[in-house]
Image (cartoon, rainbow, N blue to C red; front, side, top):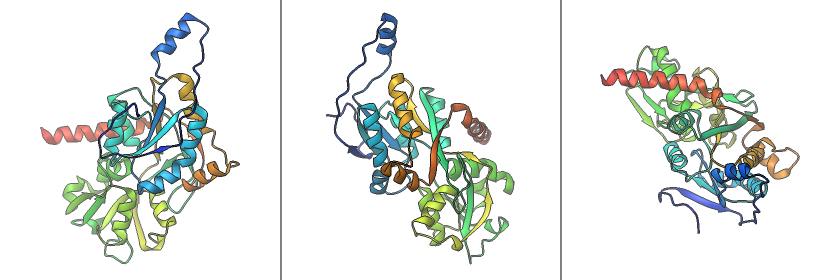
Length: 315
């Protein structure tokens, strides 16, 4: 029986079977006291923000869950909630132990609970719009052949954003891009809608469901690579300054040895191991790199600006 419960709308799958775990006997009374204060659960819950269909993500992350199980000796449960907020809620409620967040949703979560700690992110390969390294950009895209070929031409059009908790699909457009148009998105565009994911935003532009959308460069590349859209069918009208890649986080009360094993799950991925190579290839990354909370201070500053703007509007 699981040690946890979570709202029914969360989609989940359990990977693998429970393996034996032997607690290490500490030599000193002080060490025992320290160990007693840390958390050493029998199973770990790993969650990601929604990006693609559940089955595809489950298969994509299977080498990771298997590696984490082997290194930690724990049963691993993989959860894919329905929104960015659901993952944050799970971390705050201590239901989720390890997670992939967006930079903005991480800053929100860490602001509410400092025990949500970032430890790594992707070092992406260069793609169609994606540049090499542990960063990405927000890109404003429109359908080629449409009348929307400049930012000025978008005035009064239908804009697609991703999710209120998205960095490139909401925060950067509302704070950074808004300077390009001299005001709020909601006033410049006829209507602003949330699609639920970068993939859905990209497809919505291709199918004419929205006139324009802000998408993360690496998420856009994923849709092109899957053959759902063609690169030549898009205009890129604007791109943001670099944004740190999605943070991988865990809850800091976990025992240090366990946290080190979780870190090693990602930082020690090797191209020489078939399953691990497949995962790195699937996420278009060469490796994972260590990250700290300070690496996301640029997002914190933008959040402060957004919150100040919202407060000013309400007064």
